[in-house]
Length: 371
Picture 1 (cartoon, rainbow, N blue to C red):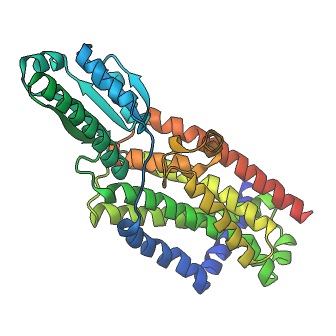
Picture 2: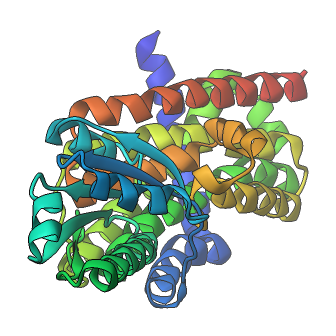
């Protein structure tokens, strides 16, 4: 029974690989477009940022430190402030991307101001998003310098300076951010297009009826259609990751196994979407247009263009249905900061749920079409 199942599925997979490889357009999509876009996007895409969440570790607990924080709280550029009591909570807020920057005020802050010595406020930026980190730390430095200037004029003391550090990307290398996102996005796009074309190609070429009357069950057909794009996308992702590590000198801080597991589960969610599109489309042109229609909002709602926290509340809830959002977080977190097992699992759980939903929807739609 199992031997027969594997034999039939492997035969369909072999046919699918041959069909993909013999189609010049599909071959170009697999080999040419992702690598070309990887090189273009790494140098051409730019970002903007708006609202900023802040973690605050105020060891001074003085009138001066509270006055400084009141200026931050009254600034329209900053939104939520999380006051923490120790460095572990402070680090956790930045690790989990709950905040974009952290402010650390030492216990000698007030004493240095009163004695006329230089006082320093440490600004720690979340460097995985380089553009956001640069802008956010710049806003913070302006407020600190402005407060320092006022204090200096009033008391004649020394100025207050901001000491800026960028975690996970110390030099704010923009390509570190963009390349981790591009690798994730291109692997998902490739998977979506290949699976979207799989069944619609059979219909357009007139071979779908032959597939239906074959000994293959609907589950075996879907499995045979899903595995080749999955293998191709996984292989392509490993090649692109190797390119960005070797040629762009991107440090890979995390676990490669966790990274590949994250890719696998993310691609399963996209395969379900692609098979659903392919099941309802009669031509390859319809499938490609439908795939592009899905990809544009999914990329916009992933946090790639602007932070999810800046979106309207209804769209923030909608992003929980978007697999691209979680894969973006995982790819940046695992590669740049070495995201741990617990943090990876937190982001994999929504992906597993989304994968179950999309694959079930694709299976039911395909069976309904067969009927």
